[in-house]
Length: 81
Image (cartoon, rainbow, N blue to C red; front, side):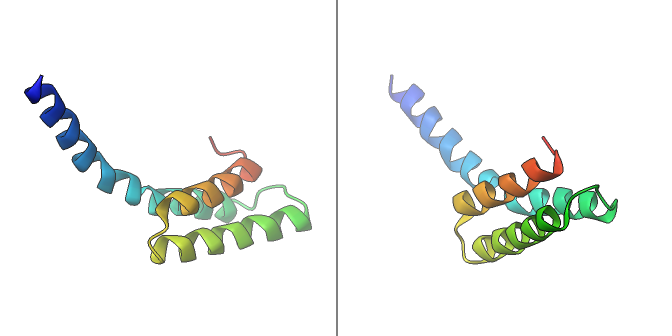
């Protein structure tokens, strides 16, 4: 039982940095989609760019969970899964 708890704790510690660095991958996906000049309305394009900028700021501030949420919204508008 002790080994199982230790293994779970170790897995959590190892996985945590991976989630923190997910933000740059999302930003790169958004940037790639924007470079292809997607067919979005002016409002949608403005929203995506604002969300992208907000996500980057949140990432730099260390709020990775909120950054991922914001970037996910931008990805959704762009049709990125």
